[in-house]
Image 1: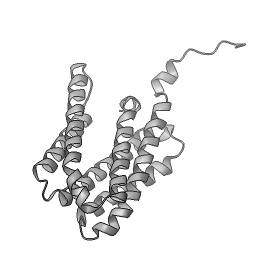
Image 2 (image 1 turned 30 degrees about the vertical axis):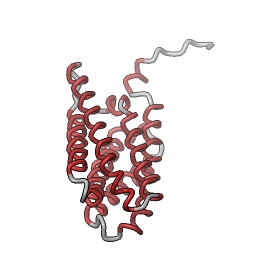
Image 3 (image 1 turned 45 degrees about the horizontal axis):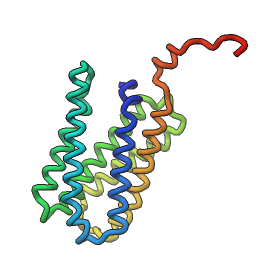
Length: 192
């Protein structure tokens, strides 16, 4: 699991970019505009899920374990299809599904922390971000439209912060060397 986490750092960065995009939408767009854009976001989520599924199948042919990636791709495809099928009530659905997505990504961050926490210096930042993401997701699932206008601004700021943290985490993991690579590095020659 550790080496997969090191190799798939870019998945975190992509999720971070998506979160920043959603945050900007929530901060600067009206509800009517968001309703129209939601269907296209569903298409983007669907295409990302199809891409992940293709990548999982490719890895499966190379005899790699892909259960997590397969589950994430199926969930993304399902969410994308649901958003596209129900565009008239899609904002409510979108917020609920965004909450589900946030809870899953928050749990994923905590799993990453457990698996590679000993190699990362700022564990508390990752822990806080994972817990904040889960709390944000639960809030979105329970109260999707009740405080939509006020909450949209707060959620927009939180999504942008979350996105930046995901990109930071992805690039932090990219810079790390897996334990196997550290052990297999040739020893330095004396005098050099």
